[in-house]
Image (cartoon, rainbow, N blue to C red; front, side):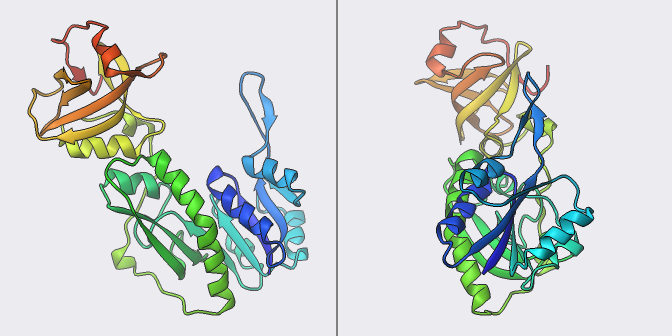
Length: 307
């Protein structure tokens, strides 16, 4: 099978790697990724992780900024691909995803039609779901609405963070991709998505990283682990404090007030207390609760959601 692989982010790296290692069955005709970007203090040009990996493996790399480029489109057509695979990339227009003989597929990090959109892992955890998932589907004109090839549910506990889940799903995705390709070759029946059952995972905005204590401690805990990394924050004496390694309980404390029990910081929520094992003041390193206790701060000053 001749393949063109579209990707930018690290989530796609293990899947690209497994295809490259199975080159007898899957011929990677090209890897399409974003152009180099300037970043950092020196504003140096930096490649995507996908571009770096592909060059190391001597794969044909195509770096593109805009799709509506005749030379790029002609190049894709000349590759004579059977399938385009899209993972952790941009939205492909119809004139691109219809080029290959078999069409174009995407691996999405949810059990579609649940959590269509940009942030399925984060939103699933924030909502307290007991599972995450992967879905392979054919691209069509609507985002994350194409016919489903395969789905996979992965049970999770109520401690796992977004970062841990991201890595876990990224490492499960390669074998799931191979199963998907086998299913396509065997021409197995596709499943049409039900729009009535659809939910949406909108992109995370920066305001969401602020913790709202006017919720149950369970909801606060789910939000924190769903947005870690980079992590959520409160303010203590007008200083931003990030909260890590959290859990929840049914104890009662006045709203925003806190106490320390057995190296655990307890913060009062609308109902129950948030348990916190590690914190980080802005610009400082992460510390445990014992070190926080030794700071001898005024306990009459509560945690707040805003300065």
